[in-house]
Length: 358
Image (cartoon, rainbow, N blue to C red):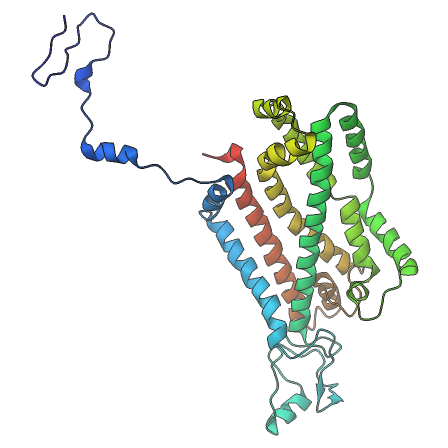
């Protein structure tokens, strides 16, 4: 027979294995109300972004990239010079504006200012052909960022489609597709870019003044190489992720109700690969920018007079002892962009990779 204490709680028998109810107390009204309050609903993307903004290095990288993007978008509307414009005063070419230091004027410009005229300052000085160096760095940064983002999109699309098909289909199809990837891995990308540049220069004829004519055959060959060769890493990552995901129970449930392969990949598999896709794409952008800068440095980049950060660094190398600042500016911009994108990619990996969640 149960015995009760003065609070009405049953006493525990010393030989009983039941819990001692005297160690527990009744919940207060406030505690009951707290249980009724549900936590805020969230999504995978929102939860990842919340963790991303707790990463100070990632936030600093976002601020730096946002500042660079704002400058390259706003500066051409403020600076009255063009990237290919040779300095002139009162309609005459200014031969004294060659290799000016930052925030200095040539003799003709200074005489024009003394007469009451106005002249926008050369923030980074001028180059050996009397062109404003700041606006050339701005357009060079534009080219590098556009190449990086578009190359990453090309790699993402081709790698995601190819890796999804290989990973989900499996069997002989997967083996054949992966052997093709191994063959592509063995191709020397630099040699392919050089060969494509030579062929496209003789085959393609661009309309003068068009965007393709400004970019040149070298940049078009670079995009082709990114589309043909650089997607294999993305394809392998997505394939490996799909090989582990497709064995889960919810994939079997989707198959059992008659869902088609394309729908299973789109609705069930790829959303669960989102962390790998975001991280790989973010880390591909600085790799593409560095590749473009390197190719422009060796003369396989954009068509002159369109500038690139690599071509500006290559041109500044000739006057390194006399004008070292001309190499410092594009080098610092490349370092800031690549470092910020790498830190942002690391932050995205920490935020969206489920294996790194604490």
